[in-house]
Length: 220
Image 1: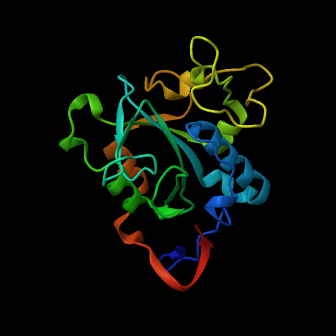
Image 2: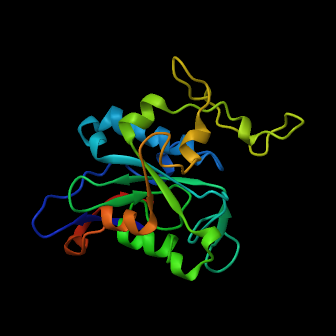
């Protein structure tokens, strides 16, 4: 399927950050590293756009968040309930798109379509399933994120899921701080913690509805 270039009537076309989904580095159940690698590629190939990119962690105090339209979902709606998930949001102006390598939606998808189909409404869910978001600038994510991948190991040391074939991501001072990103306590950690409504208010502008041009720009 071709993803049409997303534009609004008075602005230039959005930069196509990735050629196609299949060219991106991906490891199942390592969404935090998949997004880190996306940010790294943007920094390398589209450095001036990195300032408009965010890693968005999705979780809650009970670490139980429902997401629809996920490729690993089993039912017709492709529903999964994860302890957390991470997506990339690119918002250079009043428009915003989402890159999610685990979604069955196009890559990328306009924020409004992605959010309404993936998150739906908190009002229809019990409070313990309400989604909370930690929004972190991509530049900060690249600089400070670290994971030793221990959360993906069983007590006997075997892997729950096969890890990426590259070395674990670390900084000069830290080997693991994944929990500080998943933790939705607004008084600690990186970035800004917000509700689903606040996320909508931040990235959805009703006058920025995408229109399709005649030529496609990316393939999935």
